[in-house]
Length: 368
Figure 1 (cartoon, rainbow, N blue to C red):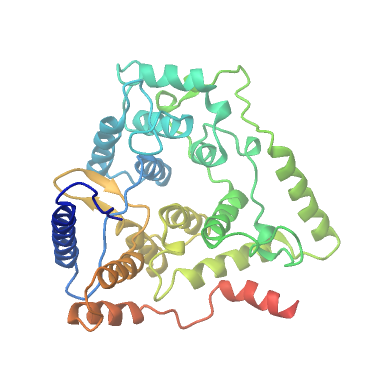
Figure 2 (figure 1 turned 30 degrees about the vertical axis):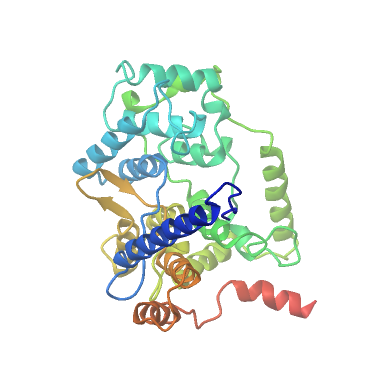
């Protein structure tokens, strides 16, 4: 808010400030309108840290389908994002953190960098000073496990039976957020199969462990273990179906949410990448329509321009368009303006006209 000036000529100063403000608003409006797509929507780049490139490198080595050009582009990005102390951060300008640093180090080793490389040595030292792989979180360890660097038994399991857990249990598929659910289901399928591809010894990262036994269990493992035992007990009592039935339900759940009209499971990179692993575990043909659709959806997140290769965590045209409409109309553009009308029509056309997962919780609340 502009405050009235008490100095002589204050009214003139206020008028000048308002003139400058209005000019700035008009320039901002013009800039925003110049970014509007011909179809009426807005879509800005959603930035992420370097871990997405790390995870994709791991996936390529796990699948055995390595795009060398793409891997080289990922490597260049990782090296460009490396901090002076050798580590990697979770946000621009942030300090080094253990999980992105371990992921980046592992990805670079897979891509061919030697542990004696001058860019790798400070990274290894920093990671060990953080406590080594033993201090990493689940999601980092998951990507280490698919390539045999961490044993599956040493990371918290996500039982596929969670798929069919009764809604009255405190923890069930619909008691978590939509994005969490989109990741849990493919992860549960992957945990069921525990797919592991062994990599050459020189690509491994055993040098990042700080304990002789390479134990990576965390305090939360006990609760996961108890939860798994509870699910097994419920199965024994006949309350839960068999793992095979849960696996079939998980596969059907994924197919229903990656089919026609969907732009990838959850429309976010983690679950979209995990679906590719899950589909391979389930035996889907990588040249078939189901797998190819999921693969193309993931590749649509890739940005490969003259600046650098990078991966977006998701696409946000609905958010961007809604926020742009609000900003423009609140700043003075008439709602009758053809550009606003075009954006509104595009936005209205994106309405979801089927019952989604949100309806499950909604129905439960009505029943209670």
